[in-house]
Structures are given as C-alpha cells and as structure tokens.
Amino acid sequence: MDRARVAVLISGRGSNMAALLYAAKADDCPFAICAVLSDKPQAAGLALAAAEGVPTAAIDAKALKAGLWPALEAAIAEANPDYIALAGFMRIIPAGFVERWAGRLVNIHPSLLPKYKGLHTHQSAIDAGDDVTGATVHLVTPEVDSGAILGQVEVAILPGDDAEALDARVLIAEHQLYPRVLAEFVRRAERKQ
Ligand code: GAR
Image (cartoon, rainbow, N blue to C red; front, side, top):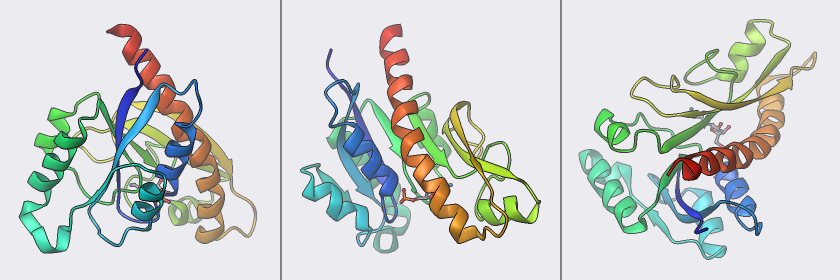
C-alpha cells in the first residue's frame, strides 16, 4: 500500500513535527511526511526537516499579511498531501480552508480537551488545582480546539510543577501520542476507501 502523504504545518520549534518525521521512518508506518511548511521563515523546525530531506517552504506571514493563506494553499497544492497535520501552528485557520480539508486536517493541543482550549493550558490546569493534564489529537473544525477527539494522553501534575516543567513533560507525551494516533487515523481512513 502507498503511504498516505502528510504535510505538516509549524510555527516554531517543530518537535512534534520531528516526532512525526522520525515515526515515518519506520517500515510499517502508514504515512510519509511530504512537506513541512511554516508561517515563520525562522522556525527552527524548517532546518531540521530540510536536513532530513523533506521539502520545506516558509510562507512569511509578516510580509504577506492577507496573502498568507493563498500562498500557503499554493505550497500545500504543490506538496499534494492526503492529510495536513498542524504541529504547533499558532494561527486561527480560516473556515474556507478548514472546509476544504474537512476530515483530513488534524491538530495536537496541550490539554485534555474539552478542558483548556486556546493558550496557557498548563497554567490553567495548575491554577485549577488539577492533578492530571495531558494532550489531545483532534480533527480541526471552524471552532477552535473543538473537533472530534482522535486520541488523548494523560500526564500527572506533580506538586510544585510550574507551567514550564509541565510543558516539558507533556511534550514528551505529545511526541508519543501524535505519531500513534495519526497512524491509527490514516489506517482507518485508508481501509474505508
Ligand atoms: C506543542 O506543545 C503543541 O501541543 C502546542 O504548541 C507546542 C508546539 O511545540 N500547540 C498548541 O498550543 C496549539 N493550540 P513544537 O513546535 O515543539 O511541536
């Protein structure tokens, strides 16, 4: 079976993108990373992806302003993906884009959704006195962080954790969750075809 082509959109560090990219090196992985695209030319993940031989493109959101989305869609069309994985892509996605990719656009979010949508999720979990948080992989819908949940991982909050400590530990869990859930999702979707 041909592997499903996945384009990954990042805005910065790209550690989840790297987790997907290294998972895709396994012989039995059902997806391949066909491109890594960023809305920030300086995103560290771009250099990593390029060094691994993955096509990259930087679409400069600051320079392009309203032209960002047409340029991004052109770069995506060129990469010809079956799925798009958002990995620390810190932008609200326009409804038209979400509709065009409905059911094929996934995101990872650092909380146990539906808890703590948006930013500062770890501080919110600490402030609420929670003893567990985690991460969620979900389908993207026009309403932010609200699409169908594909998979979650729980991470214990330790006494004395601050947002930074929790972020570091949740990130380890994210790196396990995202490749596994994306692989399961792609396998299920390909079986239906
Ligand atoms: C990750 O923790 C991801 O869950 C989060 O940004 C970080 C990106 O790190 N995403 C969101 O908050 C999206 N709402 P990375 O660039 O190293 O993957």
